[in-house]
Length: 258
Length: 254
Ligand SMILES: Nc1ncnc2c1ncn2[C@@H]1O[C@H](COP(=O)(O)OP(=O)(O)OP(=O)(O)O)[C@@H](O)[C@H]1O
Ligand SMILES: [Mg+2]
Image (cartoon, rainbow over all chains, first blue to last red; front, side, top):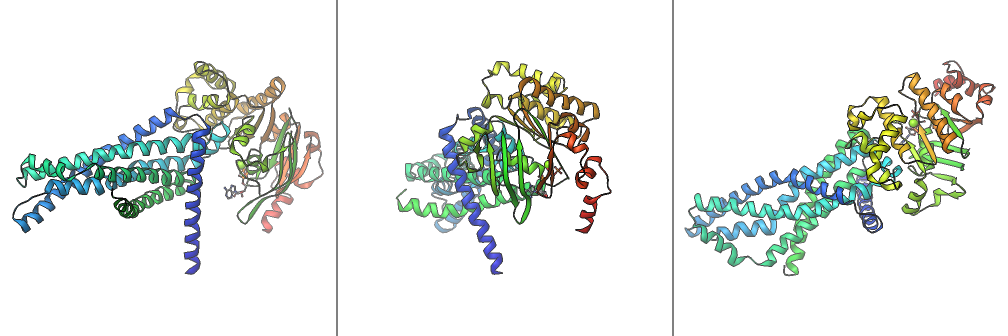
């Protein structure tokens, strides 16, 4: 029992240490080699395109359900569905936009990144990079990190947009809230700070997803089975970390008044 | 010159290389023989730090590479080496042509406009037609993969080439063509070659020196002539490829 906990902890520390080292060497190579511009653009496009549809769909429905729940609850209490826009926009922009986008991107693009790098690791393609004058940090990790850091915040913006539209549809057509009221509810109560709150979160999630997924890929051992393991491992780890980080980020950011 | 001194390599508890001493002479072909799983690939991986030695020294032109900490310095040494992977290790997200030209960008001054020419030349050297360049690695046979991988190594004009079983999976004629290629590179460009092989015919044809790896040590190092006439029962059994002999007995006892 204790030995298995010990082993688990050792393993955890090793992975955290390994990831930290990978980040450190990414920063090193960022300044000591030519940036793989072509790769970075390709990765950003892949990650963005892969995840756009699912992100749009999930946020649309999340916006809709938020409006429905808020409208019904407030309607029951106050007799009138007021502030639906405020509730939808607040929840989305501060919390659900970044979280949902992060989760979707982990499942779509993150899993793909781990599986691809993992396959390269078990078939000696990563060793081959070293023998051909580059290395996996330069050629694989930095472009993918760039891809995540660029696309997650952008997709988060889209997610907010689609969520607000979803909320609008339900508020206007199902709850009978006038369209202008829905939008003034949003604009009068939301500030730049609320945007920053969500935006900062999305950057941190992006960085975390990139780190975990690339690290899990590079450290893959043991053939096809190993690739499967590290891919599910990467997705589970990123999703759990998104939810845990989200709480602490909210606490920290609100403490700073954002 | 590459000098390996008291090299030891463990994977966890398992001792794969126990005490390897070996000198690779410049401009010569050194063949490495040994049973399956005895650590041949591991040995040549250690030579360019694709695996880190557990202990011992590896001197490349007098410099101990096991002590190099900086990845930039290691890359500067590695650039003179070519490595043919046992399973090819082709990048499966790229075409054959992109694979062959991959190293040019990082290791040579060849302008991108000339990549097509290099691809054509190097594929021809390994007996592949130009059209192959547009295929994906998944569309190739095992032997073709091996040869494309070799073309990728040749493209960067390395001074030293480490071959992990270059003729495995090739037909006898193609094997002989590859053997000739190794000799050609030596004669024309003075390339140093280290060749892991199970192909005795090829080993006797190309080798200046042969090293026989057994139980984590170099059991015999010498010229092909010495190998042909050795009294050592282990080497003799291996060279003649017989199931009867001390190696078999050893396996059964374990
Ligand atoms: N990454 C690794 N982790 C653990 N053990 C390994 C690893 N790589 C190799 N080994 C072990 O080291 C031993 C030597 O492997 P190696 O690939 O060097 O053999 P080889 O001589 O090239 O064999 P073959 O002729 O079949 O290619 C094997 O027993 C193998 O199980
Ligand atoms: Mg091998």
